[in-house]
Image (cartoon, rainbow, N blue to C red; front, side, top):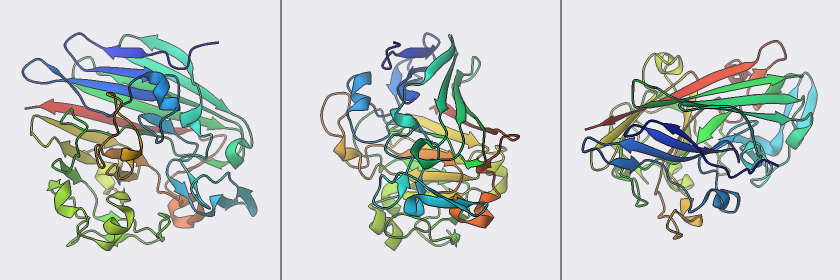
Length: 338
């Protein structure tokens, strides 16, 4: 049987290099060249690939069938209720306790700059209707310091699907808090959440609040400055991207290292972007075997809105994948050294 913890490396000598494991189609490492010729590790990881099976959290994984949370671990389609397997209280998070992050994906193709992985999910898996075949392709741009991920899914029955990548970024190349990073998000609205982190169904304007990231903002300057941020222990909220950002025409987010030497632009054609400031990463251990600091990384997860299957208006974004209409979404991360 294929070793799920095999490491597949993409990239070029002296350029952007990433490591990916079939276990959870997981992004293990992202080494970015700086102007002085050194490589800086830009995402959090564990001591060995196998540790990702033992450590809590979704570090670097592809999560699904449905990224983020579904309230009450249930939804109704065409009058039929589908009960999911809960794994966060009464709710389901990132596809359930045996989500795609816990599976060994098949290697479909491996080239120096591209890796394509596939996974079959049977009908009824974690409570979801229909059999689902999904693929994720990692690709390094040969001309630019950029990596893209393309998500593809085909189903035999109508089913909500939202696949995303879940690395925690620390552009300072450390395991210290990212609170001096600058973050900009192209969104005028954010989704408020209940105490159990399920969206209330509202869209709140960010103007004048700590959620306003339309211009670059130091994370520490907003942390704890809003009831929602105090409730979650930091950001763990989905932004409703502005139309041009949701169409990939401009960056959905820009993240800049605290030391200013590295920045990253994120482009996508998903309508939402979950921003999570590593509020619970201290429960896991890093590459040196010691516990992460709280807020040691920030996850920026393009996706359909959380709990969208239970909100008719949000369903229209495309989260209901049908047999004749496969899911096809993408994200691209471009790095800039200064």
